[in-house]
Image 1 (cartoon, rainbow, N blue to C red):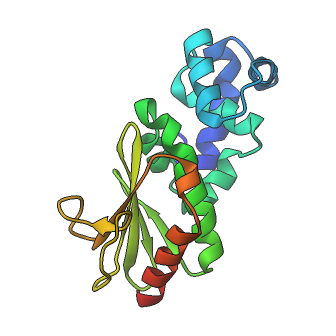
Image 2: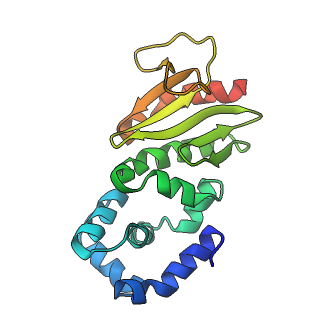
Amino acid sequence: MAKNPDEMTNAMLANMKEKTGKALDQWLKIAKASKLTKHGEIVKHLKAEHAMTHGYANLVAHSLLKSDAASTAKAAGGEDALVDAQYAGLKADLRPIYDKLIAGVNKLASDVEIAPKKAYVSLRRSKQFAIIQPSTKTRVDLGINLKGKPPTARLEPSASFNAMVSHRVRLESPSQVDKELFGWLKEAYQEA
């Protein structure tokens, strides 16, 4: 049985034609013909129109968009299956928010540890400075440790969201992952 993300991907590729009726190159042509460009849209289309399971639709979408499972697993600290599970089903459309956050965090510093858990992803230096959690089907919550920083309309107190962080930023679109937000993350990183 496959143990790591690369082995799981290879097993899925080996079984794709048997399980789905078509090989990857055939599915890529179908996905490309849909003219969809967003990961979540491609996955939804393949599941709805072609009765694909989420795992195979996700693999085709990643392959089509050139974001193969190996590079995604690397960005997620090698525990891609946990992240995939967080952004499955009704939360699949939130994945671009997570991906944009991780891309920015990887540029923040080379010593950031990205540690996926069952329900969220922890961002650590010497200690945790932030968490990324898909909280609802329409929102990702970014929890940030900025003890002593006064809240703003956007950088709200954590309250009942999560006791591991002092503040929360609600994200409903990748466009909200901006310079201001990375400023707060950089500040929290420097304090960690």
